[in-house]
Every structure is written in C-alpha cells, then in structure tokens.
Length: 186
Length: 288
Image 1 (cartoon, rainbow over the protein chains, first blue to last red):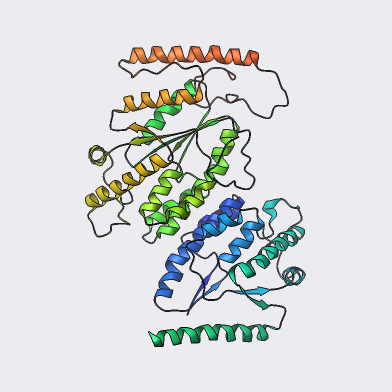
Image 2 (image 1 turned 120 degrees about the vertical axis):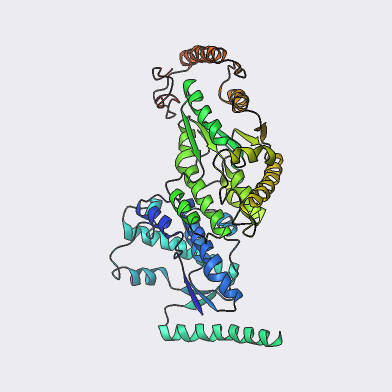
C-alpha cells in the first residue's frame, strides 16, 4: 500500500509555499497551483502504483479542491474540468462533522489559523476565527452537494474513532474482496 | 466590454479595460521576441505605455517552472498545469491591470502556444481548452509563421538545439536533430489548425526582420491609432526616421485635439494612458 498526501509534490511545493507566504494567490491561482501539485502526484505517486497493483491511500482528493475552490468563488464546472485527469477512486470516504464540532476541535488545538486556511484572502471579515467559521461553512455546503454527485461514502465523524475505523475497514475490505475475486477470474 | 473564451474568473471585471491586448504567436525561432523588442520602443515613441510579457515570467510560477524543467521528472499533465498557473498569474496580476490602466499589452505567446504544446504532448484538446476559457480574447493575434526549412538555419546559426524545443521529452529515443524536426513539424501543424480556429493574422516570418516588423507595425497601428500613417518598409534609415517623425507629429496633433474635446471629469477613475511615460519612451512631457 502507498500513501499520497494533499499538497506534497516535491516539484510544486516551493511555488505553493511562495504563493502562500507572499500572499500572491488569487482564487484561480490557488486552484491551479493545487491542481499542478495533484497532477504531479497523479503522474508519479498514484498512477504508476495503481498500474503495479498497489492500494493507494490518499489523504484528501479532488473533492477537497472542489469544495475549497468553489467556496472561494471559482466556477464549479471549471474546477471539475480542471481535475478531469484524476483517477476515479474505488471508494471516497467523507468524514462528516457539523460545523461547530469541526471548529470546536480546531480552535484552541492550534496556534491560530493560517491566512488561506481561514479564507482571509476572501475579505469576508478581518477576524481569523470568524473568517474561518464563514469559510468552513461554505466548504461544508459544497461537500454536502458532492455526496450525491460523486457518491461519497459518508462516515459520521462524531462517532468514536474506533467505531469510524471499524466502518471504514469493513467497506474497504468489501472492495478488496471484489478486487481479489476479479483478479482470480482473470 | 471585453470578452473571454467562455468563463469569467472571480473578481475579474471585464468592463473598463481600455488598453489593447496584442499577441505575437509562433513556433520556436520564428522571431517573436526580436519583433517585440522592436515594437515596444516604437510604440513608446508614439506615446503609448507598453507592457510586454511572456511565458514563465510570472512572479508566482516562473521560477518553479524553470526549476522543474531542469529535473527529468516533469510529467506532461503537471507541465501543462504549471504553465496554466504561470499564465493565469500574469493574466490577473499583469495583463488585466495594465489593460485597465490603458496600456498596450504585447504578449510573447498567449494561450495558443500553451494549448498547442499540450495537445502535441497528448493532452485532451477539450480539457486544455476548458482551462484557458477564462482568458481574455485579444484585440489581435499575429502568428509569425515559419516552415521547418527556414527555421533550421536560424537554429543552427544562433543558439543551437534546445532539449525542450526539440521535444526530447516526447521523442527520447531520437537524436536531437530528428527530435527537433519532428516536434516542430507536429507543433506547426497544430498551430495551423489553431490559426484557423482562432482567426490568427498570419505573417510570413521567413521574410527579413525589418519587413516582418513593418507589416506588424502597420497592423498594430490599425488597432491602436485611429489616425493612420502607414509605416513603409524601411528602404533607407533617413526615410524611416522621416516617416516616424511624421507619425509622432500626427499623433501629437490628434492627442491635443482629443484633450481639448474631452469633457473634464475629475472623478474619472480611468488613468491616462500616458500619465506615466515609460522609461525609454519619447522623452516628451506627460500627457503628450
């Protein structure tokens, strides 16, 4: 099994870092720089491993981009077209929590929010926590729309971690059994 | 109001963009940058403010692309999107603000080169076009067209064969000369298709630099100046300088008349196109 994390391409990370540090990113370039990062990982870390028969586990996928970019004002169809090269996942889990729970977990757990993470680039409000709340609210709305659109598998992330893990394992196992069966028939 | 090729980026107002967007396109070695070097000071001498821009010059992604190309693992999708990042950064941060301030934007390549390169590298033509459908439709696209036969001597007698210009990422098994011929021929065929689709103005770039430049100047004058004095092909320096002087004088008269006739609006947000004369310009006072 291999693991691929959002925003981790060695080719693109300096550009993303520069854009974030110097606050150069607009909604469009924020979208594009992350798509470029994802493209590099698709070409080097995802596709070759899938072809080799590995299980690829991705921490975030195109849905993260769709939710964030549309919350930033990008056209939903444009962003979906942009990621048209992405491999359709076997299964996509969406760990769903209500907005207040998400904020409660994050506020206090970290030393303030980062500029783009809090959506401060949108100028909704100057206060980072208020901005984060508004921005995350928009993001959650986008996720809700994507559940039926992409058939996301929803996991109730307010449950104990062990219960969530048991559910995820059960679902993942059923897909792996299917794969084994298919391979046997081939 | 300006138009895009389909969609509009958030925050990009398409009204009040009085400048002109002029694209110089063409394959590698067609003489684009030479022509832009000649056109920019000429336009400035005529009193226009000019922004010249080109691929990989964005603050955001220019350096990242250069570094990525030095390595041997830049994938084709990644490459296409890295260039798109560079283009959109320049569109939002340079091209649109310059057009809003009334500049003439001379761009060395535009979306067409990016589309052509991506298609030649096997990208889905619909996919790559959908990314660039947020680009502004330019006022003119001049396609400096040159065949491989005319291009080869230029490459041989100038900088030699470049890895990327020879499509070595596409044809790794071939020699650099064969790669160059194959890649440029494929690119040329794609450009010819795009020329028809996007209605490029085709300029024969196999002619000498001065002839191509004179053609470009006349076509650009049609766009940027209502009072036209055609630029002759420069048979002698004296005649050329004479015609240029005439042109400047005609411009001065026209601008003075325009200034006199224009209603004074102290609240107008549109800045004067020549409120800040560019360096290397005509040396005349602001407003001229």
